[in-house]
Amino acid sequence: MCIRDRYSAVRTATQITLKGLRKEVRETLNRCGQGAGNKRLPGEAVSLSQDKSQSLLEGYLSADGHYVEKHDRHCASSISRALLLGMAMVAQRAYGVVASVYAGRPARQGEIEGRPVKMRQDWIFAFRMSEGYKKSGWIDDEGAWKKVRKIECADDREVWDLQVAEDASFTAEGCIVHNCPLQLDVIERAVELWSNPGDVVLSPFAGIGSEGYVALQMGRRFVGSELKRSYFDVACRNLAAAKSMQGGLFAGHEEQINAAA
Image (tube, rainbow, N blue to C red; front, side, top):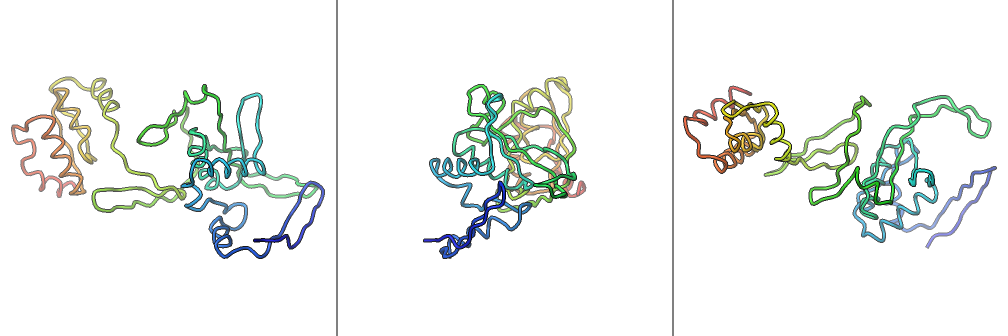
């Protein structure tokens, strides 16, 4: 149980200080970060059930969001990109939508209630509930996907490569992203466009051999290199499944890989 400790209101702003919070609540709030620029969602917030995700999203939007009727779009802005990326995952779980997070107004000088202030870069979180919107975003067994409309240089972010047996993932901006193979139909289109039967397809970062698998199936030859032994072994099995290997395709492969390092 918590009680209101202090209440103050100045013009359009209302601030409430609470006390008597349970230890678990305080610990959860601490994991949400301190200060506007450091706000983020704790891990448990992006793994809630659908109904609780809906409650979290609606509560957030009721305080920091708004609805743009002209575009049938729910929006919120923050100087914390990490917070909005987390809310995008909540929206996906709550309503099965693929939200957008993109740069808003740049850092600038502004004014709040007559006071000059330095404003940081804005980030925008937006999604639509209408069926038409889902044409640019969809969800399948592999995750949530969204069409790329344009590519712009933003800023540098720290990315961690996490590797365990038989798997590799990346942590970027607080999100863990699974390292998934390139889709075979994408490779098929590339091989069809830029090679002819009998040509050699080169993949300097072969991974589990997806490009080679497709190349052999489409009547091409394949040369690939891979530093991670577990991936290389999987690639050999995949290529063997695509076509019987002849002509010393993998002769001296371990030496070749070591030389490539």
